[in-house]
Each structure stands twice: as structure tokens, then as C-alpha cells.
Amino acid sequence: MPDISKINALDIGSVSKVDGLAKASILDIDGVAVPSAAALLLDTYTNATAAYSVRLLRTAYTGPCMRVRRISDDVEADVGFDSNNEFGLTSPISNTSDGQSYTDFADFVDHTGTPTDGLVRFWYDQSTNGRDAGMATNTRQPQIYDAANGIIEDNGNPCIQPQAVNEFLDIDNTGSPTVYDKTMFMVVRATDTLVSPLGASGNGYVLIAQQNGTSTIIDQSVGGADYRLDGATYTTTDRGDLYDEVSPAPVLASVLVGSNIVRWFVLGSTFSSVFWYQCSEMVFFDDDEFNSGNLGGIESNIATAFGITI
Image: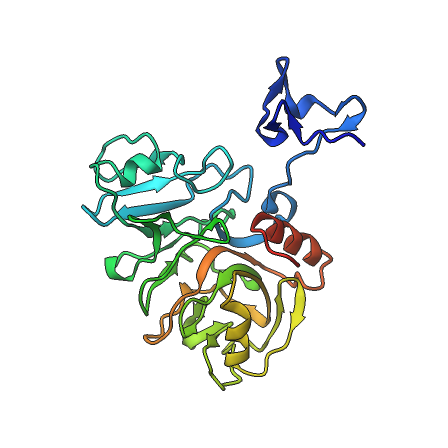
């Protein structure tokens, strides 16, 4: 079968038209099917209760990816998705707190000629529930852009990176009293000695990993939980074992909690000695996705997007 991954040395994914005909209208070339782009996650799996990502997850979502504060002067701006539907240097800028216009995200963080760190004020929810996650306290905002090295990445993908303990983003649950978070999927990596990606009321949490930790409690106040790492069932003996699994590289962590949690309250942890995972995506669903028939499709979509082998 002939290779049509490129046309005149240009990746076919970068080709928008051939002889004026849109790529989406071209079914085949000399009888060879043209590969189509992967469906957006939430276009296929529509019952998400909250969704935060550095990539676009839903075609109908037209809002920005996140709101970033540059630390040089505390100016904030909404950062959208670039032409690849990702958070990037060419992402459009809008709703600036200084009223100025910027060409793109690169211009925003380097507008004065001296690059500045960028911290996350809001990570916007791409589900239909509007549960944006934000932090008003400057010293508790995680980082997305480094003045010296650019957009923070893990495995080549943008990610939010906590800088200190007790950094987290509060989830806005206003107007969603009946929303339940039952199953969650996260692209995360442990980058400090004691970490948790989620916190709820009553000091509830899931997936706490601790370097050399011997505690067997990795979830609390959630009625127990089932775990999968990189598409396979995972049973841990203690927090130290889990840390060894999630610290060397980003992993896809899938979690099914044992009871309906009425809304998680924070991304990260409110415990003073606990860090947040390095994170690229967190998606929540209101039912048991481990046994719904959707599990393989959801995990495959996320793993493919972030270069994770499952």
C-alpha cells in the first residue's frame, strides 16, 4: 500500500486543501483512504462532569484553555488553543487585565522584551458544567511558563507544574449541586516526595503517592477506589510503591471511587505538606466508566494524545 502520510514532503495533517478542495472532503487519493483526525474526547464521551486539559476536548467548547498571570507585573490574560488545538506559544490572547492586545501567548509573556514566568490563575472547565478551577492567591498558583525554558512540558506536552506545597486550584461548584464525580482520568507525574492530585471536603483525596512511604492509605473519604495505571489494573501495597510507579514519567491514572462524590473541591491538595502532581489533563465523569464499555476508548484517546503507551 502506498505511503500517503506526506504530500510533497508536507505532513498530511498540515494540508488543509488540495486544488482548492478541503481535506475533510477528500475521501481517498488513488484509492488510498486519507486518515482522519482523532475525534475530540468529549465529542465521543459526552457525560463529563468537569474537564481540564492543555488540549481542546470538545468541538462545541469555544472558550480559552486557561488564564495566565505573568509575574513581572501581575497582568492576566485568557489563553486559547493554537491551530493544533493545544496550549502553545501561538495560542491567541484575550480578555487582558491591562486592556492591551497581544499577538499570541509568546508576545504576552515576552511583551517587555524580558521573558517572565507565567502562573495559572484559572484552568477552564471544558465540560458543559462551568466548573472552572482557579486560585486568587498569587503564591499558591501553579506554573505553566518558565522565563528561561518556555512552556513547561512533560514528554513533549504542556503541563501545569506546582512550585511549592499547598498549591492548588479551587473548583467552582456554584450551580451544580447535583453533579457527582464517580470516575476520573488524569495525565500526571509525581515530582515531589508527597503528592495528591485531588482534594474534597472532609480531607478526602485519591492517589496520594509518597517517596519511601509505608502508609497503605492512598485514598480517603471516597468509599475506597479502583485504580488503573497506563491502561492496566493497579493494586498498590503502600504509597511508596505508587510513588515509584508515577514519578519516572507521566502516567495515565484512571480512578473509580467507591461512592458518589458530590463534587471534588480542589485540583491538588489543601494539606500543607502535600504537593500537587505535575498535570496535563484531568477529566471527570458522573458514572462508572470502568464497566460502561467506554473505558478502552477513553484511555486510548488520552494515551494517544499524550504519547503514553498502554
